[in-house]
Length: 66
Image (cartoon, rainbow, N blue to C red; front, side, top):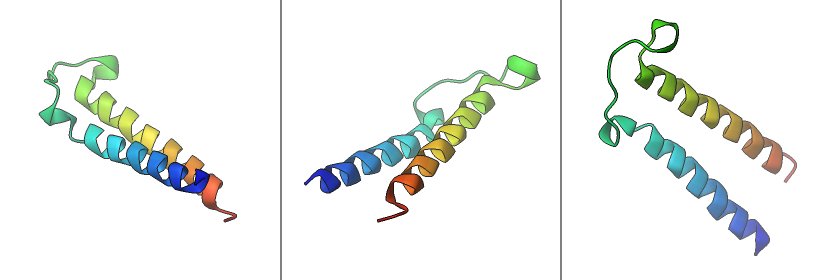
């Protein structure tokens, strides 16, 4: 039962990340420059992708030996 709960948790996490990639439908980002001259939406997407890579790394580490 614990393994099934982990599958649901990981599925919901990756689904949430997929929904964050559609943020242009949820949030209104301005195109004005922000940090290092890049717009806020670009920094948001960089953050989402870094979150995805980190979650994917931990997912692989968790189920690598199974």
